[in-house]
Length: 129
Image 1 (cartoon, rainbow, N blue to C red):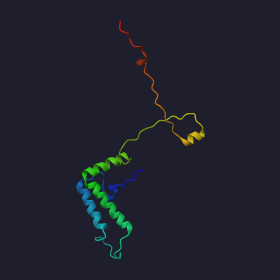
Image 2: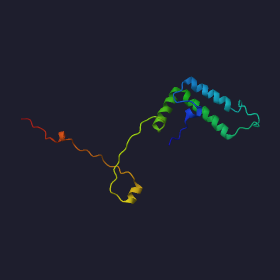
Image 3: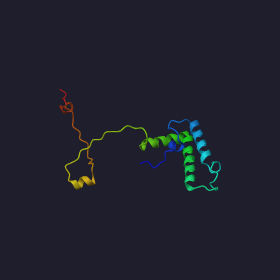
Image 4: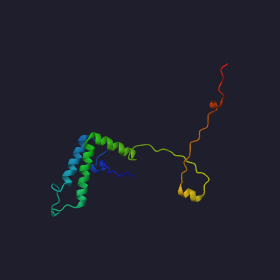
């Protein structure tokens, strides 16, 4: 499970968005969420902690996605953390004839790989006459 936030979802844009789309989404969200510009008439000039956290997440997402270097690093980390992309890999494993108690502790047994030479490698080397 990844601990980093999804900046694309925060700004409500797709991962292949252009720089212009990123700044447009940021400015639109900032206008609607910022305490100085929001349209709530009866809020009594109070800002909840959740509103401030959401505003902070929007600004943080913009800082990361607007810089090409930071965005590339974020995308690499996102892919390696199991985000979108990647292909599933089939994994085969063999269980040894262990007892039930041992299986509960360690369901997968890892061991050395087995190498069997091919018939071509079994021939004896020729000696020079």
